[in-house]
Image (cartoon, rainbow, N blue to C red; front, side, top):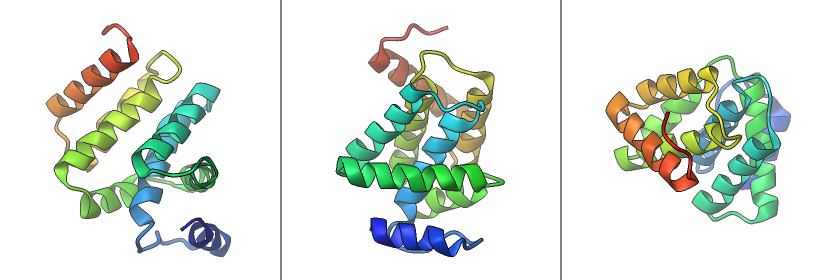
Length: 152
């Protein structure tokens, strides 16, 4: 999987890859986008992305590192979220899309605070992957409770 991702990155294609690894890269890129949206990638955010990739996809540390690097490259070079969210919509059931929103909240709150740009990005992604505001809000509350952060 990682070899194919790295080969694809070296090709520098404009179109998003279509294949078995596409959903993982799309999720990883959205997670990295959430970490980067405020203009700074905090160590806690990088660690959250890495831990989520390991846990959700059952990856080794090395495989998660490579996927995170590929995702960071994608997020830094993407001009819009649509390519990533299109893949999520095509490949994920509703429950998995809600899990993705929870993962994004975990990244957004990894540094202990929610930046307005992170909140806006989560609202955009929720709309693009058909997760209504009330379900996005419920996902946020579950993450805040899990992380031990009081609601604002």
